[in-house]
Length: 261
Image (cartoon, rainbow, N blue to C red; front, side, top):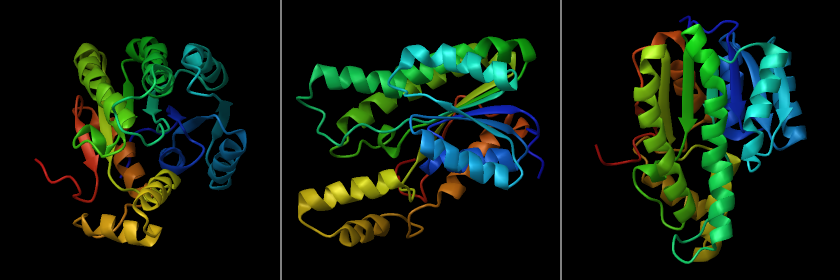
């Protein structure tokens, strides 16, 4: 199936590993020219090398999303190097696992800058060109915690939920310009972040990581953690020319984990 994104410029935040790397690789495989952003220069280089080895085009841009005020600068650098941006995949790291109550204001501020403000400012920076060209795809990755808050992930539940409201609002503002805006909700996908959270839960509960993982898989109807490539396939469709009538949506990629309708 032709996703109609050949030679489109796609920006992937958090592209150094996990979901971001998988999305970048899939978009490249579909013919997009990919701009990779991450704080980790070595991880960026590894993702770019894999894409180039597969015959794709990738450029790297080091950016700490905590420096949200650099968003416009980074997007301008990408445009200068690769041309106007057609696709933006917003993907950020997660805050430390904590209860929601009693957290220091400085931690809230730091997490908001890295997880929310960076996304908003990067998107604002690419919208003018998308409007002028009559095509744009904004896809934002969140967490199953925006649907069913996850215990001990208080900051993540709160901040990622704000991106759902932002995305829905933006979708209505730019829908007439040929721009779609969607949220993707990953469930338990097999990434380093998931492994980290499993290890922290095992530590808190005095159990082995294998026990925690088995219990978690037992709650998932398909009986396993997702593969990042499975998640990337859904994101790539939402970023495609074929998904022109899908906007303002929250799409779950969770193996059936979330029980509510």
